[in-house]
Length: 169
Image (cartoon, rainbow, N blue to C red; front, side, top):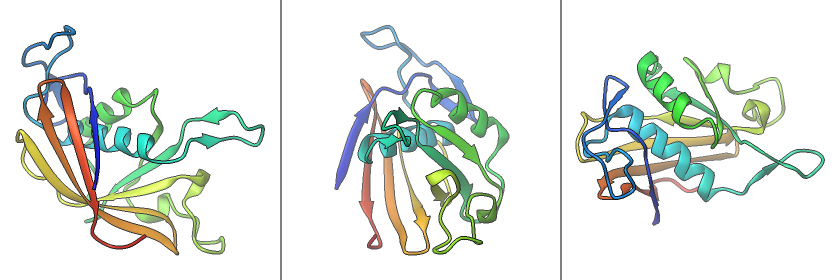
C-alpha cells in the first residue's frame, strides 16, 4: 500500500470548478469533499512523487508527461480538464486524450506512450464525497501496464492518496 498526504489547494469540485469551503492553519482553502478535479489532481501529484524523476538527455530534471483518458472512452469533462491542468503545472505536463491512440505510439515496438510518458486510463469516477475510490490503469507500454485502486480522502491538512495494485505491473 502506498500513501501520500498532500495539500490540495481549492475546495470541493463542482463540475470541475473549485469553490473554497473554509481555510486551514496556513490560510489555504481546505478540501472537504473530493470531486473529479480534486481526485485527478491528487492522482497526478501522487504519481509524480511515487515515480523516479524524469531527466532529459543532459541529465537535467524535466516534468513528466502524463496523458489522461477515461477508460470508458468518454471525454473527461472540460471543466475537470481545466482544473487539473491549472493545478498541476509545476508537477507534470498533463495532456487529456479522448482515445488511447492519442497517447500511444502503436507504430513503435512495444507500443509505448508518446513523449516517454504514462497513460492514466481513469475508471468511473464516483459522486463527490469526503473520500472517493476509483480504478486507474497506468500504461507505459504493451508490457508495462498496471491497474491500481486509488482512494482520495479529504483531511484537515489537504488530501491523502492511497493506491493499491489490483493487477501486477
